[in-house]
Length: 410
Image 1 (cartoon, rainbow, N blue to C red):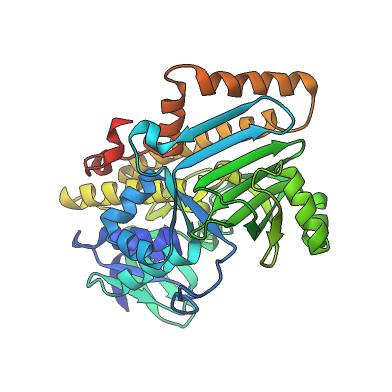
Image 2 (image 1 turned 60 degrees about the vertical axis):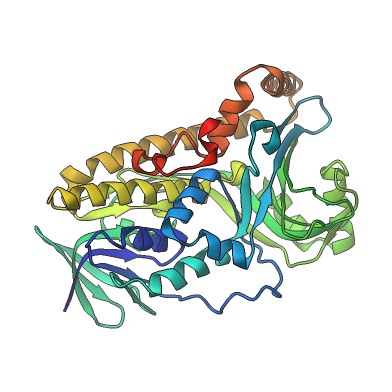
C-alpha cells in the first residue's frame, strides 16, 4: 500500500495543474488518470476542435507552474482585440490591448496542448507520481486518511483526495455531494474555419436571435475556431448540413465580418449544462474545475474558473502545511470552499443573466441590450472594469497577485 498526502483523481488540465503547483511543498502527490495523452504534439497536426481562451490570470498561473513557455513553443494564438455585437442593431463593444498598454488580452490554445505541457512537466517532478492507466474503484473515508482502491487493484492512502475528474465526477457522486444542474437548452457546435479575410488576432462574438457565434483566432491569420451556441435541434441540423450550405449560413450569420467562410474540419456538437456542486469540499475531499461547476461557454471562462480553483487550493494547502495543520480536515478546507463557491456562483449567475438578456429578438429587450452595450463602449471607466473581469484579474488569490505582471496597471 502506497501512502500519499494528496491524491488527485483526474489528469486533465486542472488536475495536472494542481499537481505541478504543489511541487516543492513537501507534500507527496499522486495523480490517477485513466487516459494518458494519446501522442506527442506535432506542429504539423491540424488544429484540434477543443480550444480554450486562456486569460491573463490563467497565464500567470501557468507561468508560475513552469509550463507557459512550453505551451508557447508548441502552439498558442495571442489575441490583441475583442469585439462583441448584436446582429442587425447598433449594439457593439470593442477592446484593444494597445489602448491599455498591453501586448495581448489572452491566448487561444488547444486543450490538448495545455494538457501535454502539464503532463510532461508533472512526469519529471520528484514529488509527483502519475498512476496511469488507472482510475478510482473505491474510496473509504477514514478519520485520519482516505483508503483508495484503484481499478488495477493497487491500494493507496491519502490525507486528502481531490476530485478533478470532470463534469460527471465519479468522486463527487461517490461522496454523495448533491449537484444543482440545469439544461441551457443549447448545444455548442465547434469546428475550424478558414476565412477569406484575416482575423487580425481579434476574438469576435455575435448574438443573433436564439444563438451566439464566436470566432476565436488561431495562429494562421486565416484560421478560426468557432463555438456556435444554438438550440439543440438547430445545432444538429447545422452539424449534418451539406458543407457548402453550412459555409453560406455561417458567413451570413457572422455578418460577413471576415468574408466567405470555409469549413475545413469535422463538426462536433456538445450539450450545454450548468452545474454547481452543493459543496466544494468535505472531510478529506476537495472538488476542482468541472467536478465542482460548469458554465455556459459564451465568455470562454470555464477552464479559467477551474485554474483559479487550482490557484486557490495551492495557496491553502501550502499555508496549512506550513502551519502543521491537517490538510484533509473540512474545517481547514472551508476557506477554499467559501472563496471558490462565491466566485463560481457570481460567474454562473452572470452568464445566465447575460444569456437570457441576449436570447431572442423581442424589440424592447433588443433595444435595452443595444443601449447597454453602446453605453459600456463609451462611458469612461466601464471598459477597463469589464476588461479586468474578462482577464480574470478580479479573481486572483492573494499569493498569485504577488507574482509580477504587466497587467497590474489595468
